[in-house]
Length: 338
Ligand SMILES: [Zn+2]
Image (cartoon, rainbow, N blue to C red; front, side, top):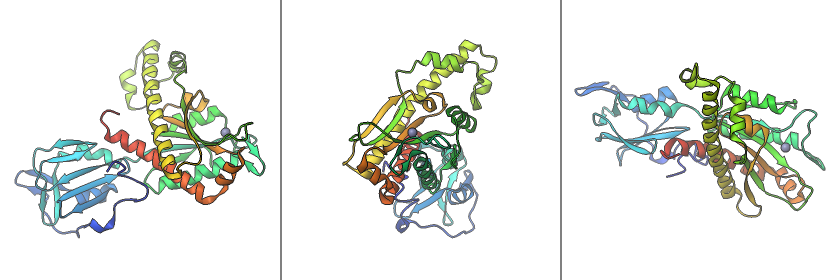
């Protein structure tokens, strides 16, 4: 199942699930130390599913899953088959895995962190048409998107959660300081061509001058865990680091844009166009993580403006955007060639 962590089913269908009552079980076996998969799931807030027919135990979190088979030393994690030094046991009503599996399972409980940026705010109204103001729509959509993501175990932060004015530089520095996994800026479009409509996702244009961008970043310290590797590096070496990092972020941003558009296309269907576009928007250029800017629709198109005001349509759209973000993160975690 590709869309493993679909939003339609938060967790798993209950029918197949047998969750065991706590019973005494041996934590150690003759072969060495074992741990209970169910207990680990409880401790780390993961889902645990035991299929007694297939004798499979599955542990899952917001970013992926691992599946064990009682009686086998092979297990599936991060999209590939891995081998343990001992077989997984089923004993005393518990599925017991050798301690070596713990290393691989670590990543499952790490929640996805997303920063959402409601466009405009304060005296910057964004697009205004009739009774619609972009700054209000973006804030409402961002809040709803945040709730949808949170309901699926994602950690979310907003660049603004009121009608406050933020400069583009403010937004970027908020993102780069809190270092989320993904960044999404929310906007609603406007055009003098009133017939223009559709849902659009922007990523940083490949036409951006990467060298200039990397050069502009070269004086900054390297953030995060990689910092110590680059301490004492020359300015030129740091520019190379940023160049590589930017190229990777652009590739990831394009994949993210594709997942979001695909998810929205599936949810909304035909009727209005969907586009992926490269652009040199400030918030895409200077944020240091995979980043997209979503234009939820054209307020200047009467039909689309009406749709966007409709709560059922909006809910569907927001749910689909959330699903696209989660699918991207899941694919990234499970696809070795990502
Ligand atoms: Zn805007």
